[in-house]
Amino acid sequence: MRAPLLAGTVASVTGTAASIGVVLTALTGLGATPDQTATAVFLMLISYGLLSIGLSWRFKMPISIVWSTPGAALLVSSASLGLGFANATGAFLVTGALLALTGLWPALGRVVSAIPKPIASAMLAGVIFPFCIAPFQAISEYSKIVLPALLVWLVLYRFAQVWAAPVAIAVAFIGIWFQLGVSVPQAQILPVFEVITPQFNPVAIIGIAIPLYLVTMASQNVPGIAIMKTFGYEVPFRPVLVSTGITTMAQSFFGGFALNLAAITAALNANEQAHKDSTKRWMASVFGGVLYLVLAFAVTPLVAFVNEVPRVLVLATAGVALFGTMVNAVFSTVEVAELRLPAIVTFLIGASGLALFGVGPAFWALLGGVLIWQWLELTKSRRT
Image 1 (cartoon, rainbow, N blue to C red):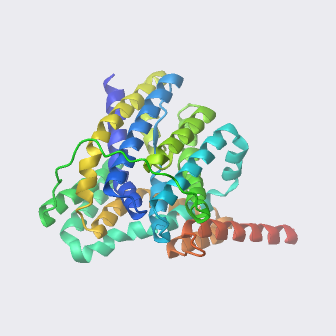
Image 2 (image 1 turned 30 degrees about the vertical axis):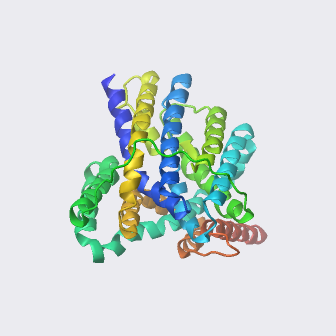
Image 3 (image 1 turned 60 degrees about the vertical axis):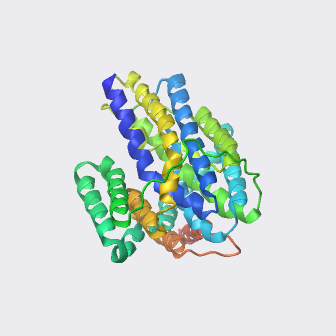
């Protein structure tokens, strides 16, 4: 019993700590008020805690549900569109509907899987690139805060990789506390719940909903299923996609965005360190789900703290959290020689921040990469 408890605790704490900064930055950048941000994060933690418990218990396998960290990074790049939070929640609702539809109609999932992994990874790398350079941009002004965090990340990435991001972020927050005198303001435990009426702007659907769906599928759900297979688990595709999609739709009325299968967290709960008996590793995800429920009640004070921190430091801590994601995305971008050109173009468009007709860089990056890929395939077939 001790091993599943430890595995679930490590997975939940590291996963949440490493990504919370990105999520908070995304929601506030889209125009959410502090109360709306706290409500959205609170409900997402509650939702994926309950889903992790329920799905793991029902299917007796370590099914870990989390929010989409790559999706949150994409949302930060969408903040420049200035669409307002009501339009963003409408996009979240559409994303949830697409996730549920994928569970009911697997052909849609096959269409997403047809997009080459290097191009999907390049889109993700381009979107999170501004985050990953933020720590280095902040050094000149906040060296005493950022440099210790980077050093801790580097050391732990070598010796205890799973703890690298959360501990580095904790070091950064401690530095902010000591160097800038920013402390946790007094705040109530439960957020102020406010229903948001979603608005459906075509630009938001094209520029937020569809890219968020594609990133969630390509960077979370598909890898999550693959990782579970390596440990001998066949994830029940339909129940997972339908339940996460419907839950995403429900919580969108309070500002919550995409829920999905975990990838790294899934590996922590599904390997032999969680339990020697593979039929009992589902308990790790259940313990992790319970911990998510507990962590939800720390959200409101955390949001209040982050609102007092200079934005450049919030971006820097989020960037540290995304270093590992960037490494994996860049590796996937260049691993197939024939797809390097379209993948690199995809990355460059995503990193450029290009916005045309009110639509953000993620959509144009993916569109550009796919068009170049298809053009090269066409010219190759003609030569053949």
